[in-house]
Image 1: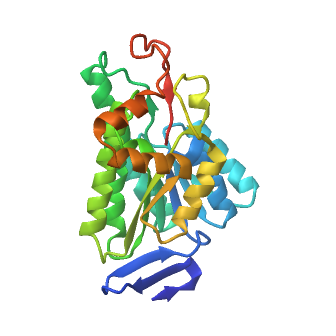
Image 2 (image 1 turned 60 degrees about the vertical axis):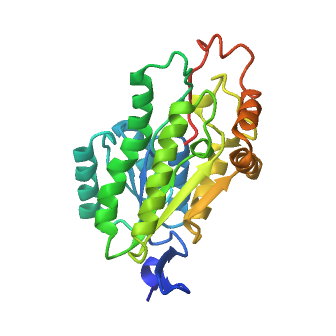
Length: 290
């Protein structure tokens, strides 16, 4: 099946499975969760410039309105729908409003969560479960209703994960655990919903320079800009891939760490931790990987 007007292609692979791919975001209705700032903000602008119709959501109504006005001023289409991603009912209501006003959602980017530095010897239960709520539960709150809407008609659900979701990163343990949980959940959705027409895309950036990461004290080798990250995400969404990791230097190091003996991998990762931080973590603040 080929529908030119919405740039949608459905094909069958060698095993007979129906595969959904978007050649281009042009003409697509794209939902960006976490669009009020940072990576999501840049993805929304770049997608609008490529001809997508945007629905943007986050908690801040003012920031979303500013983004929507900017996109419209640049000739794009954008609907601002503030919602608290930690509240499943609020997300469900937002999705219903988006489809009532913009039509069926063709693609969604779940760009939610954040990763402050954690000092595990002193981290509390609230700290660790808070990371799970912000990065895993919020993702689930969007993922489940989107799957329900897209089953039968197809679509794309992309998730901004992190290379920290592939290994247990010192100073980022609870964040790594939450992102790993989201990674495994998407992998399982992809397996169980094969043939549904939904493409699940997991995106694994390394360190990304955002307002939240300025002077935060966390080492950030091979750090990239928000704009570079957004461009990579757009390219991944317009591809047929299921997993994309970047930049290549950090992705390659992560692959090596995953196959090394764990004591060696731990020593290598700890070598990046600032001297004295394990004994005095008080200077650490928030870092956004995704």
